[in-house]
Each structure stands twice: as C-alpha cells, then as structure tokens.
Image (cartoon, rainbow, N blue to C red; front, side, top):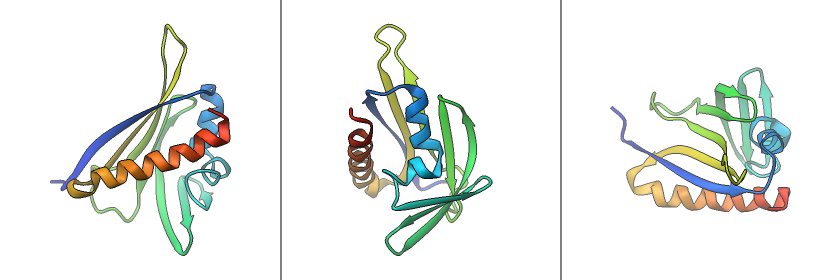
Length: 127
C-alpha cells in the first residue's frame, strides 16, 4: 500500500504539441527546464541537479501525447510522474497535465516546485 498521494496539475502552454513533447521527452529538452543536466541510456534517464543525481526509467510514451517516468530509487511501486499533452478540440489550446505522487504532507510543496519548473518552461517556449 502506498503512503503517497497522487495529484495532477494542468498548465496551458502556448506551443505546438510536437515542440512541447521535445521538452518533455529528450535529454536536451529536459535539461533546459527540468534539471541542470539530463543524460539517457536507452530507457534510463539520469537527472542532475547541483550535486544530486537521480535516475528514472521511461515507462511508456506516445509521441506528442504523453510520456511517463518512474524514479528508480522510489520503492513505491505505484508512483510515477507523467506529462500528458491535451489539445482542446474547439479552441486548439494546448494543455500540459502533470501527474505526480508525494507524501501527503509534501503535496503543496511538490506542486509549488512544479509551478516553478513550468515557469522556466514557459520562458523557454515564449508562452
């Protein structure tokens, strides 16, 4: 049983789905906003922040729609983080939906961290 709580955040992004996907699915794209540096070997991505290094496995993806990762050191079998791109059928607005897990007392802090990261991404793509 998991002690972690699943939560979702949604952000409107003024970008094409294909451009946004490159920032979510490639080491070079992720290193521009998510981590200081990102390397990959096959399905394992290494995320580097200052002196901290964490690895995540690419679980599944569908080009320009979603990508899901799982932290390798996370013992919670059910937790993951996912970037999902949705396009509104009428307005054609692009939304990025982030699904993540955190300890119950850390959810608000985790949401604030994602919001800060997304501010950097918005700056990169000019939205």
